[in-house]
Picture 1: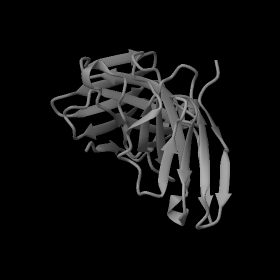
Picture 2: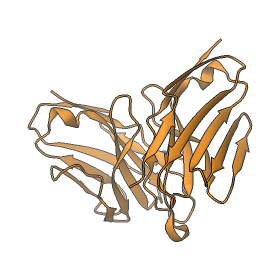
Picture 3: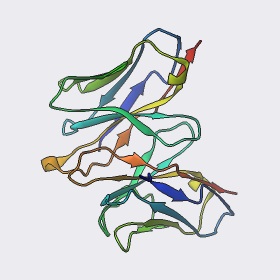
Amino acid sequence: GENVEQHPSTLSVQEGDSAVIKCTYSDSASNYFPWYKQELGKRPQLIIDIRSNVGEKKDQRIAVTLNKTAKHFSLHITETQPEDSAVYFCAASTHAGGTSYGKLTFGQGTILTVHP
Amino acid sequence: GAGVSQTPSNKVTEKGKYVELRCDPISGHTALYWYRQSLGQGPEFLIYFQGTGAADDSGLPNDRFFAVRPEGSVSTLKIQRTERGDSAVYLCASSLTGGGYEQFFGPGTRLTVL
């Protein structure tokens, strides 16, 4: 089955700096890669996702890059703010034939702390 | 509109007892997933429903765990003879079949087995 590794486990940055979180996956059939943000005691919330037919996607201060050959993808947050502090999870799934079904395999999470 | 809801938010039980956890998906979402999240870990897949049927239950850890979705909407996760190792947050997610891949998560039920 799929295995997703995420690094680093903790990341501390100063407000305004950039933060990068990296994930690798094992199953070459995986074709959907979402990133979730989870605040303490809250539900995971999707912040950005990418499909395997795209190499990069950006949404304001957040971007995700995907390298299918190397089987890794990364989350980039620019101009970090204290409210970006949370746990971030990457995940991977396989959607066969364009179906919406795909159980997510999550990484272990990265605790991001942005210091004012 | 309303998001995914789960009840109860917290459940404390004693070892050996039976518990039921409920999930109300977003209206119209035919795909429903259960995940389990242990402290400091990412969610782990348990089971997936497409409509009323369990299309993939490969993540259920053993036969003490069972889930149903009799009318294709609300789902109940049932755990028999609970063990201390079952303590975790149980998350439910739903998605719109054919409408994209995003899974919307509920707030979870924190289960504590004493």
